[in-house]
Amino acid sequence: MISRTNKEANNSGTIIRVKSVFFSYDGPLILEDINLPVNRGDFLAIIGPNGSGKTTLLKIMVGLLKPQSGQVFLFEQKLEDFREWFKVAYIQQNATYLESKFPISVGEVIASSLYASRIMKGKPSAWGKEKTLQVLELVGLSGYQKRVMATLSGGQQQRVLIARALASEPEIMLLDEPTTGVDHHTQENFYDLLGKLNHDYQLTIVVVTHDYGLVNKHINQVACLNRKLIYHGRHEEFCQSSAFKELLEGGHHLIVHQH
Amino acid sequence: MLSTVITSGFFWRAVLAGGFLAVACGLLGVFLILRRDAMISHGLAHVAFAGVAIGLVLNFLPLVVSLLVCGAGSLFILKLKEQTKLPGDAALAILSSAGMALAIFLVSLRMNFGVELMGYLFGDVLAISPVEVWLSVALAFIVTITILVNYHQLLYMTFDRETARVAGVKVGNLDKILVILTAITVVLGLRIVGLLLVSALTVVPAASALQLSRSFHQALILSTIFSLTSILAGIVLAYLINLPASAGIVFLSIIIFLVIVGLKGLPRLSRR
Image (cartoon, rainbow over all chains, first blue to last red):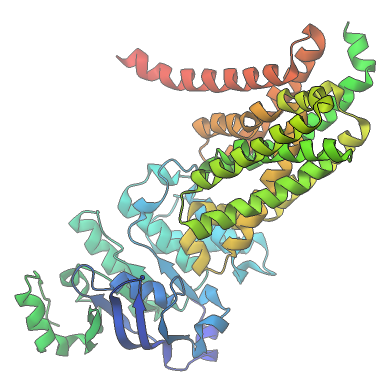
């Protein structure tokens, strides 16, 4: 599914490196001196209170926002020089930001991204069709390609966006609160899917989330953010850390699954 | 009666120019509505109108001058949107009133072209000259081909702009391409339905198509069919019963729209 040859060719450890990043929107600092590496195979959860800069950090990591100072490296290249964007999949906060009356079929959602990226270059259209079927099956939506996007539930739409991202065979997927507004059961299924992609296909995943209790059985890395990076490290050690206790005292309800 | 239609050069010129323009409008309109930019063609029409007035004052091909002015105006609107933090429609309102003011000022300088200018206000498809026909056909063809060549990128950007950007789609360039295509279409529409109705060409057929479509390419096909039907039937009606073509074209497209909306509403009413 996710091209292995690509992986073997570029097997260096760090996929994203955030270096001394500062950011503000014409006002107080939103992010202060952030240093954060994301390594191949990581499943990293970025957590923190509202307004702590989580979404901003994610947008900086994919180049949608420019930091005031500091630098982001993707696959060891400066972000400004990076061109292989098909390796990077970005999934925004739940699918409801999409125009609900947009007449687009599931198949078209995936095809438009396949043909708009370089991945289809020199490949026959049959390859694209085959790919569409594969990724829909992977996210549990076989047979949905003719369905209108607007008629699907929020959880299903989110799966279509994951399928679209997978179609271009990315090496890293970054998701911004992907399950806001969908029910608990759907959320659990969704994170199980991410866990499977990380475990079975070695897809590197970064997820900004409030649902720490839901992701923590799949992740191996935690970054706890509150303007500064309060904690970054292995998930198991995080639960013993002072940052974790601070979060709990701050009124965060965290259900923790211990491995 | 019909035989005079078939042998009339005016009629065939109108059909040729109108038909090609219809395809460009049908395709473009779907993107404009879904980008929430339906009013851009109305705003740009005012700019194009100023361009026509400049051309008439200079006594140099009004359609060509209008293309240049309107193309520049369309890029200026994008720039204004970026730099002033105004919502797009405010920037559009400023530029369209500037265009209209300029046209009025120019008319006051040389009143003798007022009548000719009226042709661009209300449209006069049967008065279209052979040169204008070929220009219209060529430009409408360029608009259509550009949309089809960039189809997937345009669809991706329209549906999900930020993700498209991260995926490497050059959204800034595509924005420019889309406004320039709109500017070209508007200038061509000016000759056929006139300043006041030009936005109907880009908006109404697409709006009808969006009521029925279950996929994006279906929306494009239906929009083009509705656009072709109303423009061509409007021209035939204009020739047969001496109705102004512009009014006929817009009436027909609005009738199509109302019929579709009515038919969609029917099952809901009967269930009550």
